[in-house]
Length: 357
Image (tube, rainbow, N blue to C red; front, side, top):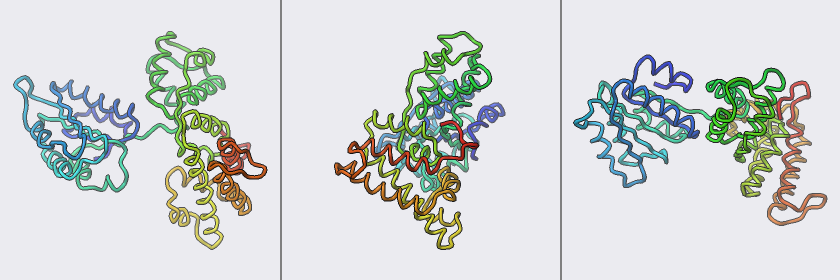
């Protein structure tokens, strides 16, 4: 049984199941979901808890299986928690998890909690995961995307009795806060908690937030790609500065940008040859958010513009490897910025529909 994260609280109020599986790559949200399940279990008499971390191929699964079938003298209900940081239970772990899943039904004395990282489609199709899903509750914890981050911050502030001022200044405050913490949700949570220590309940002004919230944003090249395709110039600049400061490899940033340019060109060529856009996107393995971004920008991208971007990407490839190109910066990061901004400008929404950068 699959459950959305937003439904967990309501689900727990109705009663506990004996098996829960959490998977996702946002540690804060996974931890909070696990804490909620543990708290509900403790309230229903699950007083004992054992934790097993699967550390490698030589992990002893018999210990976990034994824990699920035994109770101490001091408890009649227990939580058995299994953490698999790699997301791979291994040859012995797969049948062990299937056995645990099957024995969980009807077992009112043991609550099993399995915690996993983000899983790919192939792993979720495996027999062990299918058994966990079939016999228990599965919760996929999704990250908070940049567009949803201001609202997430506002909700967290409301929990501690605080709110930003209303109107445009409030929106500016939340956007500023989001820029400072993007890509680092755990630090964002800590910064929100810090505001509760610094200021009383009630309204927060921009100056208060600006003086208190540290710049703890963390960026990755894949999010940079999304920002460029969305035409968010201000965010692109912040991300490039952040990636440079964090020591990200120039060649990896270039690879990400050039892959988008090449994919856009291939889809455009396929469309010119008569392929419907959805089919062309599938053939280039463009999914999810990128699929929506490609659908928006492709109609406005001319073949000439894509050819020019492709040529620029070729030149920047040489620059980040130490070569020089006429009329281009010799510094790799400056060249990457120019390439990113060229693509960003082509992808930018019309002024009427342009959102927060």
